[in-house]
Amino acid sequence: MPDSKPQIRFRDPQIEMAHGAGGKATRRLIDGLIAPVFGGPLLEPLGDAALVETGGACLAFTADTFVVKPLRFPGGSIGDLAVNGTVNDLAVSGARPAALLVNLILESGLPSEVLAIELRAIAAAAEKAGVQIVGGDTKVVEHGAADRMYITTSGIGLMDSRVRCSPASVRPGDRILLSGPIGDHGITILLARGEIELEADLCSDTRSVFPMVDALMSIGEGLRWMRDPTRGGVASALNELATDARICIAISEETIPVRDQVRGACELLGLEPMHIANEGQFLAVIARERADEALNAVRSVPGGEGAVLIGEVREAPKKLVLSLSAYGGTRVVDMLVGDPLPRIC
Image (cartoon, rainbow, N blue to C red; front, top):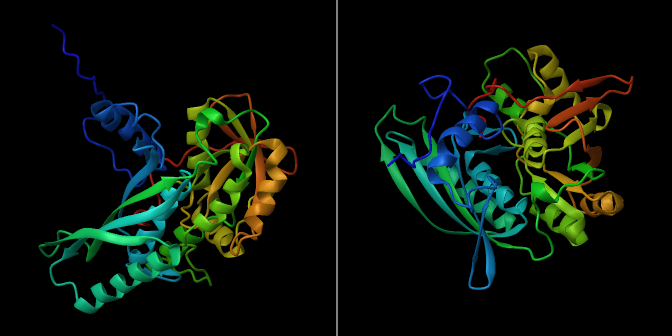
C-alpha cells in the first residue's frame, strides 16, 4: 500500500534561515513542510489567527514568539511588543481580544530588575489594550542558550459578528486602506542597535490597532480583509493577499506615507520601505462604495488620523503587486527575500 503521508520537498536539505512570516523563505517553509504535516481545514487559510466555532460562538486563537534585540528601544520594549503583536493578530482577524497567556524564556543570570521592567511593560500594555493576562509559564535556560529574554504568547478573542474577512471575499475594484506611516518599527530597531553611524529622531509604532479596527468593522460586509504588516512589511502582506486571492493589487507609490527619517535610512542602506516591519499599523481591503466611509471611520479614532487609501484591487495580472509612480512608471513589488533586519520582534 503506498505511503499516504504528504511528500515534503525542499530545494536544499537544510532549512533556510527565515525571520518572520513576511518573507518568501518562511512562506515556503510553511507551505512546504509545516502545513502538509498538520493539515486540516482550520489550518488551511493560514491567517493571523485560527477560527474555531464552539458552543455557538466563534473564537479566534493566535500565538507568537518575540526575540527582539535590543530588549528596549525608543517607543517600546519586548514586553509591550509581545502584548501588542498578539492583540493585533486577533484584531485584524476580526476578533475582540479577550485574554493572553504569556510565557517567559529567561537566560540564567538575567538581572531581576530587567525582568521586573518588562513585566511592568507587559501589564501596562495589556491594560491599555483592554486584554487580560490569564496565565503562562516561565523557563530558565543556561547562560548562552537565550539572548537574555524571549517571550511567547497565546491569545484568544471573540469574533465580531459584523464581519467575516478572508482573501476569498476580495473583488476587483476594492480599495486598499493603510492605517498610517510605514517602517517606523524596523528602522527604530536597526538604529537602536548602534551598529551603523546613523541617527534619527524616530520611535517604534508598537501599539494596539484594535480601536481603529473596531471603528472600521462598523461598515460590516464592506470590509473584505485585514492584515498587520509586521515582518516583511506592506509588500509581503499584499503579495500574500494577491497570491491567495489570485488577483492583482495596484498601489499608488506617492500615497504611501513614509516619514523622512525612515525614507532617508532606507535610501542610505539600500532598503525598500515597503519591506520594513511595522508593529502598530494595518492594511485593509474595502468595497469601493464603502471606501470613503471606512477611511473616515479609521481617521476618527485617536492614532488613526494618518490613514490613507493607497490603491485598488484589479483582476489581472494575477498574483502580482504593482507600484504605479506619479510619472506613469510601473514596477513589480515582490515579497521580502530573506531579512536584512533580523530579530526585530
